[in-house]
Length: 216
Image (cartoon, rainbow, N blue to C red):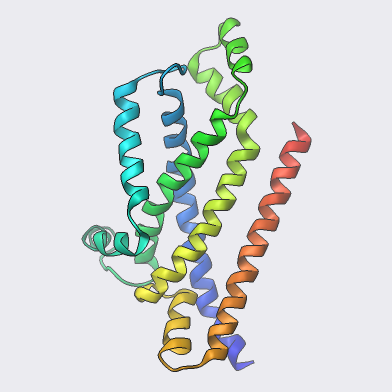
């Protein structure tokens, strides 16, 4: 019972960090992924300068290890939320790490859409915006949802790392009790909770993807 009570608050903090960061990743990452796809060479809104600029930004952010990104963003995090450590502060680097990740997954999902469908829509006079809204997004939705699921799971791991650096959550619990106080049972329970969270997220994501695919 005591261990359960010890795990409740860090688990809630982890879920708060992960799902808040997921909202930001979805809101900004999916449009960015669409932009990267449609502005590429030979696509419906070809604009290579725009594509190269945003593509480079995404590649740079994705190439920075999360642990380094945490430290690099300390001034920016402090500017946004007034502090550099804590659960809310951790959402800033988590979101910034997740947006480019989500963008690339979305771009990949959109590229899987059959070009014949896009060409058919163009031949019927559909505008680029109509193609995006009525062809690209609906056709790639199962893959996009799968990408969101992967992003959430990725954020679970990142949140544990952020927690270990003072961000709260299960990572903080594992370090303070499992590592610093040599309570290996707490470390084990923390790992179990993280595994359960990941399994539930994957199961829900797979279910949603199947439902979308079934209803198409």
